[in-house]
Length: 136
Image 1 (cartoon, rainbow, N blue to C red):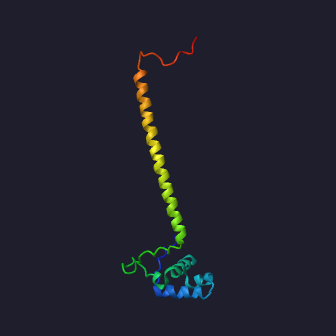
Image 2 (spheres, rainbow, N blue to C red):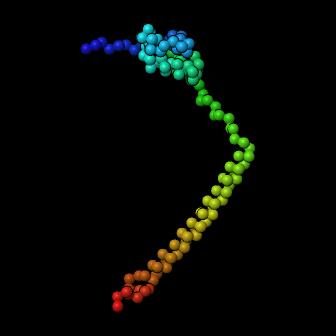
Image 3 (tube, rainbow, N blue to C red):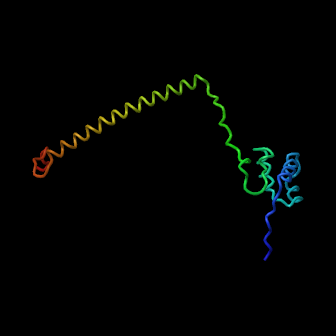
């Protein structure tokens, strides 16, 4: 049974030098073989460097609170003032329509309750049927 390999730990300076070599155009497969580092790890380091610069290539272990960054700011609002006003008018129209539909829904619910109450009063056991039997 082969002996399990111990996980290697790379410093930030090492990762930074490797990423710079990658960005300079060196072959990633050759670099991976030379340094005995998985290609996948090299690409991860490169992507982190592109996303956050040298600080993103953190040292091993749990990140310090000072290393944690706040989330990026949301992109600036690029809507035109006319579009914003039109969207607000559309929202107001839709809210008005929802209000009208709620009034109608309440009306029909009350009407349904009244019809059900009227049916219960006349349709009890032993009461005369409201329509004639279809049997002749």
